[in-house]
Image (tube, helix red, strand yellow):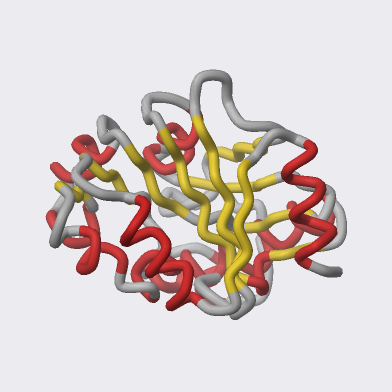
Length: 196
């Protein structure tokens, strides 16, 4: 599995794609590309690891519920630009996200002029089926543990149990086959492990 292959697949589907050797390079690129606008950020460990809230806040208005409370979740939905990651990216070009409250997946579908997906190499999977498996059985349990969810996957940390727990964070699945009409979507492929 190579970034060259996934980059070609994504470009053939209509996404803008850039590849970076490190997260620091990707963060520097975004710090230049995103300037003087309203930025929304979805719940993303990758964004946190790259320090993007801190750097972008120096010259943009940035809304992120992880730093400003729940009111920022709604404010992030109306920004010019939206930053998030994915739970998995298939080498065949499908971007997969699972969400609990829906704000993150909804924001990738509508309402922003530009959406950036920051994708570490650990998120890649060879096929759509493998990417879906990764999203459910690797990313979701780690996120459930991080959030302190009272679910079997958080307790055991090993896989999805397709539970019916009230604290379940896997409530909606979005697969992007191509960019949504009317929204510029850019995928930043990063040659290091980031997020879950």
